[in-house]
Amino acid sequence: MRIRGGRPWTVCAVGGALALAGCGGDGPVVQEAPSATADDASPTATEAPPADDETPTTDTPGDDTGPTSAPADDAATFTAPPAEDSPSAAPTGSIRDADFAGLTFTDTWTGQEVTLEQGTATIDTDGFPTRYTLQEDPDFADVDGDGAEDALVRIFAEQGNGWADYTYVLLWEEETAGPRQVLPAITDDARCGNVTTAIVPENGVITVDYLDRTVNSEACAEQPSAEATRTVKIVDGYAFEIEPHLSALLYCGAIGAEPAPPEDTGLPDGSIRAYPDDAAMALIDLDETYRLSMPEEGMRTDPAHPGWTIIQFILPGQDTSAFERQCGWLRTD
Image (cartoon, rainbow, N blue to C red; front, top):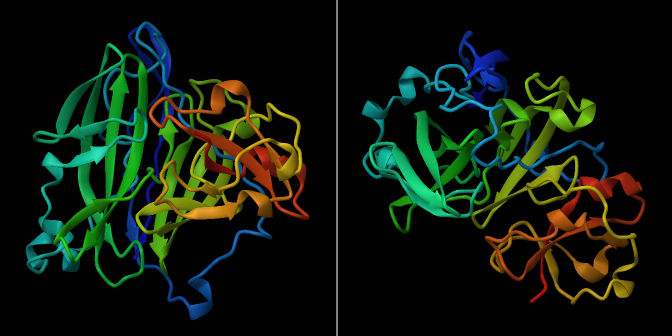
């Protein structure tokens, strides 16, 4: 199945200020994907061209440049599945039976566990309320290639004038007869950030097309203009990028420490992982990298994951520009 979506973004007036927001337009369409060969199932990451990535920027209340409610009508990445896949025809015990309006999930933006009630929730985040809204109905596809239908769920979060619009993957687990959340989110749309234009799950990987704000540094109220693509794979419930770089799904940040061989960095031996969890996929062992760097200080750690540090790395033969595009998590405590 090929799930495509367009997000028509324009400059809108919100509360007397300009903001990047959706102001209407045609919704996305669902198309059938072309048939694939077995060679398409396992893409690699070592020879692909570089692309940019960026994590969302969290704003605090008081900033008056962002929307104050979810762009529910025109920011959708997905539409409903074809009629033959309608929920009424779903077999008993499928992921379509899950209560998405009462979903409990971990928010990529804040790191908090959230439980929706009738599709919404409000959680205190460092003294500020963060409101969550389930956007539309989930879309369904076999995301991880195991033959079972999985769900792609969009959740909009807003705190003051800051917001994030993320797509989460929920895998169907036969053992528990229920959904399991994949961490982190596979899209990173946020105020003053990227704009996802298409998500295509096929052959066990996910292709995410997006407009990359980091390339041309457009103003917050302007739509990004640079088109980019990343390929995402899920292993053991954790998502990571395999093309154009082997990297965790996060903005790696500007280089803050001089690149050095791993033995000269003073960092503890260990694996650079796709997510700050010992169970997450090991992207590469520290001693197998060619050069390492630490991002600028503000990007090195995440308060939601104490004891873990973001590490930028390159492999033999890679250009040093990969430092800002290829990174992962290292346990340092």
